[in-house]
Image 1: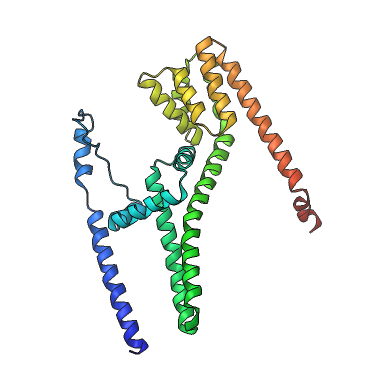
Image 2: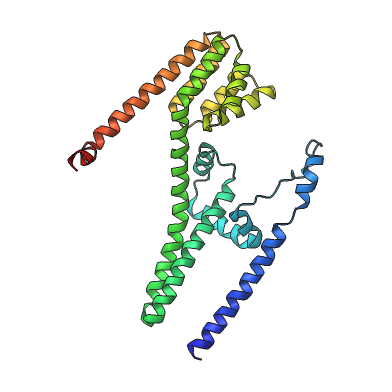
Length: 290
């Protein structure tokens, strides 16, 4: 069989596969029953152990899971057994502000690995056509790419955590000063939180919005901030939440506590900037020399 017939066969298989995928994606894109019914039954009590209806996500990973669901779920379970660390992953997902379960994250890791595997396999096929003796090396390269894609998604999650925490630290002094001004003007902690959350839109304000939602559902202010301190991966934010909880419980002047917290964060930012400049002293001289 010549190369032309091989190419025609591969093209036919790829075309049929694309048609199947497109047909499945079109079915997934239709409004689901849960999307139409959920607004009318959201507040009804659950009977027995009936699971809560959830609106399907429109992300590419969710679409891939809908098309190749059983295979991806099995591969995600295998990744979980090999790598482990579900507690660490769950903790980092919370710190990154990503509303996903550990299993959903494992599915994303599998998708990243399959994409890397596909790219390396394509390059390997082209290399094999030129040199048929490199098939073993191509297989090893594909397996390495698969593992690299899985690990790369985990590293990207850690990078997302660091990026979000930097945004929180940059936003923290302003939020603390706004809270202090609101409290000094005579508003209570809940009213001050409401005002600040409505006037801002950063990562820290969303965290405070969750605290405000918990307080409005009946949770004490001190307990809500204690939970925020326990979940936070930043010592400064944890001290801020603990300080507010202590001030509310013991009657300490809250405005003074917030001003002191903002000053501490600004001082920590200045120290970090000085340390970063000291580590990159030679690189900072490059524009001057040029």
